[in-house]
Amino acid sequence: MCDMLVEQFLPEMFQELDTLLKDPKQACADVGFCARVGAPRKLVGFVGFLSRL
Image (cartoon, rainbow, N blue to C red; front, top):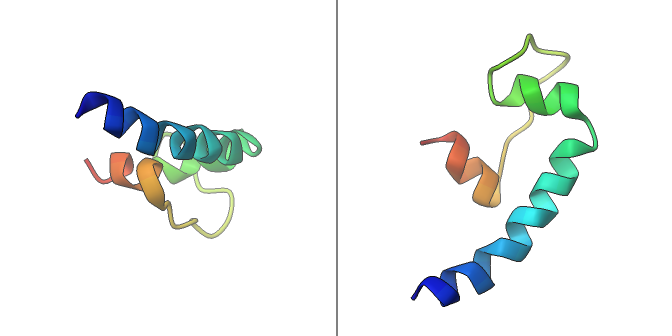
């Protein structure tokens, strides 16, 4: 079960982290640690799931 979860979600997680880290100030604002730079982005996928925890 663990292997299946890793195989399914790990590539998506790395892809989303790469996208988020292209604009670290916006990513910081999206998770609520920094002041908003512009309009909030909707976080999707694995990172969106983590932000709702």
